[in-house]
Length: 117
Length: 111
Image (cartoon, rainbow over all chains, first blue to last red):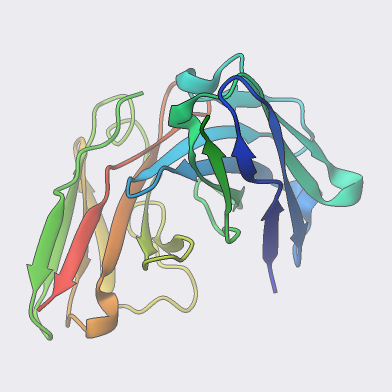
């Protein structure tokens, strides 16, 4: 059974930093692209970033470029999102998702990030 | 990277069929057959229900079907059931270098 479990969310002040983690199991993590997708309270889904299976390529939505960094450790079946210079509008539930093909196959349960003073 | 356009809400009675549209551009929906749809119940993670425009993952009911014409994709749910009441999101791969874009979401109400 595929499982993706996010952690690391919490309350942070504007300008602060936070590191999210996602631990994968039930599939060959090292073979697939992975993404972070977020959902602001009461709003829709927004793709944030993705990373190639071997970590050699990374892409970001314009609004987080230069502030967020996606990374992975295939030996630990783990995906990360380092978030710096956080803004109020970064407040959202952050999901990690796997890409087995051009689709978001499996999703974690999400972790809530709240940016507020 | 503008969001794809979906109607904010649709509704239907049990047993009826509904269609949700998803409008994009030649840089996303029109560029590839990589349109997918996700169902999200309140407080839950999204679930993949359609991929590659019209394919269904194992375990997804055949009441869900997808199609595409030009820059617009559609999700049809036939034989509506109360448990279909949820938010639905379309998604497309884009030509902007491995970027993805979601639609704004459509709330389906089963009357």
